[in-house]
Amino acid sequence: MASGRVINLARFLGRAAEPAAAAQSSALQYSTVGGVAAYKLPDLPYDHSALEPVISGEIMELHHKKHHAAYVTNLNKALEEYADAESNKDLQKMISLQSAINFNGGGHINHDIFWTNLCPEKDAAPPSGELLAAIEAKWGSLEKFTATFSAKTAAVQGSGWGWLGLNKETKALEIATCANQDPLAAKGLVPLLGIDVWEHAYYLQYKNVRPDYLKAIWKVVNWENVAQRYKAAKA
Amino acid sequence: MARKISYMNLFVIVAAAASALLACSAQAQIQQVALPYALDALEPEIDNATMNFHYGTHYATYVNNTLAALKNATDSGVRLPVATSNLTALISSIKRLPSPLNTTIRNQGGGAWNHALYFKHLTPPGSPATQSTAISAPLRDAINANFGSVDNMTAALSAAAGKVFGSGWAWLCYTGNSSADLAITTTPNQDNPLMGQLPGAPAVSAVGCTPILGIDVWEHAYYLKHGPKRPAYLEAFWKVLNWQQVSKNYDSAVQGLELDLSEAAPRALEAPSKAVSAGSSSSGSAGFGAMAAAAAALLALV
Image (cartoon, rainbow over all chains, first blue to last red; front, side, top):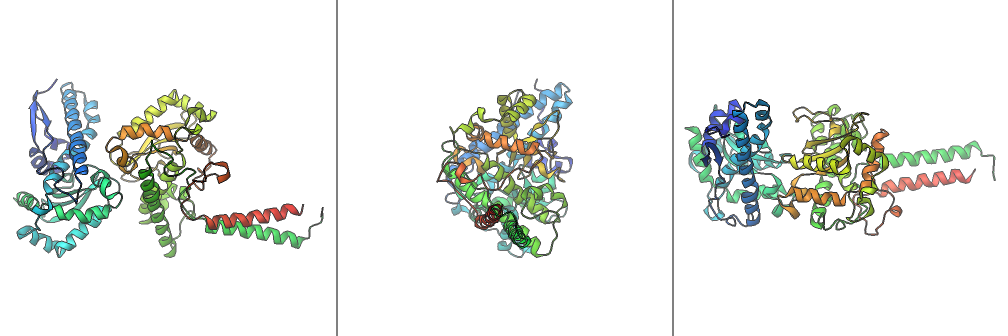
């Protein structure tokens, strides 16, 4: 039976991650149905074809309406089962549901960020102000940053993500990679910019040439969004 | 018939055979397994485009990267505990390889091994080898003993393959455990149960077992045709699985032999003139030719 409580996704993402993760997951849209949080698939801030020719409309539709949608559906299902298990005091069941919540919750968080990190090429502008200064201070130039980011992200084995994150403690920018849908927050970094390198993110268009995808995607990065996240993270 | 062979003649023949053997093994190196079927022959179950990329690019890249890493290591004077031509030995010995070679062999060598097994046990749909009647008696007995029936086993393996999160493989493995000698397990990325339990990797059930059947569930294995619908790919997979090859794999594993991941059986025994070969095998066959000549010379004297 539904417990009447809203489940904070951050609980599942590791103690160290709680403050950052809580901030992130509270930004996810959800509605309460029967007292249990039901997360919602967000709309894209642009049409599926708006990122062409960098990312095809076909990829965007599958990625958003199939892959991300499945994460949301499966997350809600796992959370509902978790709520039942919890009210039945079935600890074994609760434990067995952890990985489904991690996978699907992480998938939902990551893609929720990803769609906002991108914008049509015509609307994209390079970073400026404090964010640019911080990038240049750390990597020397925007070009060196993107080259380093692309190289590290291309090297991800199998499925995963490349991230620009803010270290909450040192207030420094860092590049990190995560496997599968592991949330960046688990590494103590606030996600600012994420690039999905699961094959479904690029394969239909770029086939196995992940470096080409990583080179092209910079044309559709929404630096304004990244700057907003940077500002919020430093606060 | 000459009954007396001078020791000199004998010495020459033996020396020729020995040097041919040496030449053969010195030139042997890891290469892609040659396919006894054309890249479009698995249609409609596995599409031509996927085979082109999967075999011609992904698999080829794993092999090339493995060779490059091994060459780099040997050129730098790194001493390896196993022969660089033996891919199975390399991936089984990952824990004994120095860093960073161990990581490269895990990811690239694992990719080379896994795809060798995979492509070698596929065959055109509708061919006799895809029928369950092609399962050898010993393998059938083992499947029945461990899973109840072939259908139970394939259902369980498909379920395991469906549950892999991210990139990885689902395996039917020979465990060597007489009370339960087959097991189903999964590994992430290009890991393989033969690598053992690697630090930082999720726990592998039946770790150390020998895969005899592998299902690739990296998205590149199915995305072009099926998009995100992995179950549709899994259904098609069983229609192109070569049970004869799986039976041979089981047989080798039971005997403690390494699986034969080298050249496919001689062309004369397999069908098509359309058979695709990748990777140079000319040095290998020159060696075999010399060996054959030496053997013939020896026989002619008897």
